[in-house]
Amino acid sequence: MRTNPFYDAWVFLIGATDEHKASGVGWLLTALFLALLVATAWIAYKNWKQDPAQRTMEHLATWFMRVMIGAMWFQGSIWKLPLPVSGGFEAATRPIAEYAAFEFHRWIAKNIFIPWLPVINPLVYLTELSLAVTFILGFFVRPMGVVGMLFVTQLWLGLYRQESEWPWLYVFLIFVQGFFVVTNAGKSLGLDALIARAPFAPFKGEGFIARVYRKVT
Image (cartoon, rainbow, N blue to C red; front, side):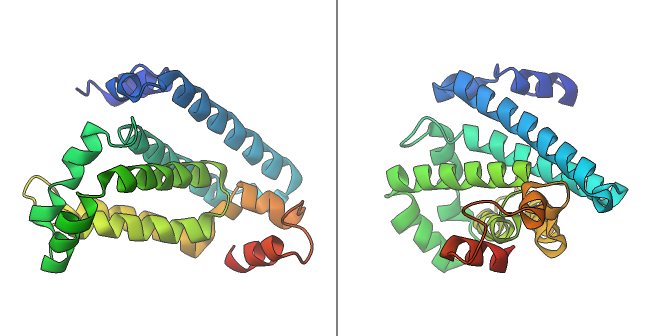
């Protein structure tokens, strides 16, 4: 049960939410999230210090919004635990079979998503955790932003006919991540900006990983 945004944020930061407790690894999730916050602050500081072009309100605002969306994905990933199938994820997936906008989507939910929940749940958790890490650190943001847009599009269409849902919420989240793609938000006080200025292995040189990274970011 939510109280107010400030208290709830504190409860989340100290790992005292019901989702943390139910996950079975709440202490580890809390440590990881705090480590990500420290890391993004250090990365932003290094960018700010090394590159005068990064010292703008636009870059600072983009960084803040990117980190907050990353925090949203991190929080959302927690109730996908414990694996292989969490009660919360199952309860959130079953309505797609009834409320998806299109019949083929409802068929997929009934015949693939639900029967294969022990496979789908871990994949969804890893996807959401990856989006969280990507956005908080500002690493590989453009391609992962596209992944995030597609991920939310599935939710938008999958829950479109459920009366308790407001479809525009998902549209807004698609647009926010689209903004990260268009503006290359990882290069606003992010790790992508550090790598662009001073590449290091395996992102340096003409190796396969370096070439792919430069192409997609």
